[in-house]
Image 1 (tube, rainbow, N blue to C red):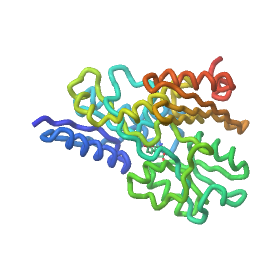
Image 2 (image 1 turned 180 degrees about the vertical axis):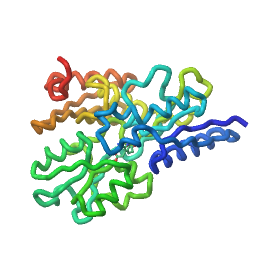
Image 3 (image 1 turned 30 degrees about the vertical axis):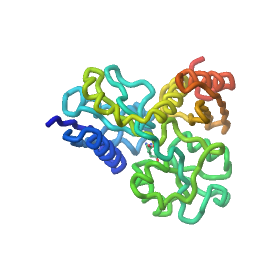
Length: 305
Ligand SMILES: NCc1[nH]cc(CCC(=O)O)c1CC(=O)O
């Protein structure tokens, strides 16, 4: 019997996501033996310090990629939101699963929504994108860093360190923690991260027979949406540690993409929108990125000009 080993991080969310991919893979190929290879990544060991300072979210992928190169795993499962815009040479995404809830969640013991927070309330999030959006909507709030995996963050919230925290709906829903969601932060007042809510499978270019096994798991609609979002982000800077958001959706058979860029020290933000042909999602991403550049995105992101 053929065996496929799926490399995964060891967090509860990563294990849930990889078990989900394993179940879909077994259903698509009865008779295939699918196993998990859980591993601690450098990204997990340094979750307490700023990821941007030590090499960014690519750290979550590195160990899983090495395991594939060394033949200890055949594929790796990731939250696409954490996958760098440019993959390492020799790797590709074999499938993107149907997107789950792509929006952020407002979580609080005492308050039902962002609007209900009293002046000066303390909100926890370490995401630049979430911090700038919070300041834009509520300049009076006190924003504090909040790191760690989902359960750690919920525990810190429950301990009373924060009046509210912001997390992705998808992670909470996957772990059965959706009861914590007091309200959903959604467009047009709040923009999610690029590819939020989408799970991706990474494989080696050199093993096309492995990649082919994942083709039945690919959701074409999700693939097109996240290709537009990732093309926009790639054009702007190519990382995930900056205040950038993008959200693509189908409007009838056309693709509509909104991009958002924030700047923390001046507390400003810009956005731009475009509609394009679903056959060319990257072209739409680049088009909307150009609009953002025309509105000052390069200076806001401190890119060399
Ligand atoms: N940054 C960590 C991360 N990466 C993916 C998710 C949620 C699941 C997803 O977006 O698919 C989360 C947690 C969060 O931001 O609350």
